Length: 188
Image 1 (tube, rainbow, N blue to C red):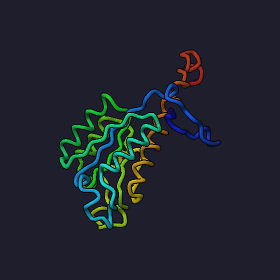
Image 2 (image 1 turned 30 degrees about the horizontal axis):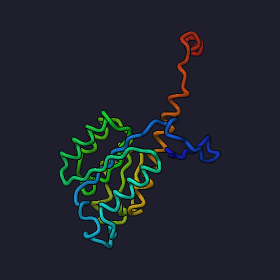
Image 3 (image 1 turned 90 degrees about the horizontal axis):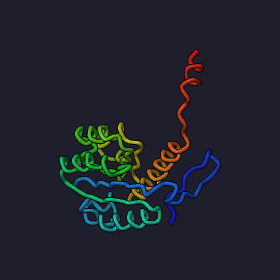
Image 4 (image 1 turned 135 degrees about the vertical axis):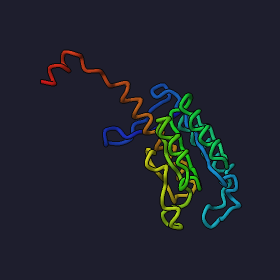
């Protein structure tokens, strides 16, 4: 079962199996009102329900040999708690903070505090919407931001985060500390 495809020295894609990467664990958080997907403002958010989106994420996670934990809350405090809990068991976070994107310093600070690679996702392009939606408090502490691609944005975030985490794990495996003598000589 495949784990991830990753760029190999800019040449092409390398196929990585779970034995090379270990099973990566990703927490996916959906913010306020996303439980209404499929019925709420369909011209902006589309007709796919949250259950449909989560099903697509589970299917891709299985294909990539990832463990995903999918959660939705309308509560800022609950989202903060889930972010903090993630540092103990997860390798990365995908979050659509929804309206909290533009207001929540608490969510921003929680992401910064846990230090996990995080991808911010939005179904709509927040920069093509009302002026107050153009500012994201989350983007400055996120690894990346995907907006305006609908549900596909979540799938791209999952693939991208898998690729990033796999590259980091591979780098850690191949990195060797510089011997003390060599380090001392190189400082002269």
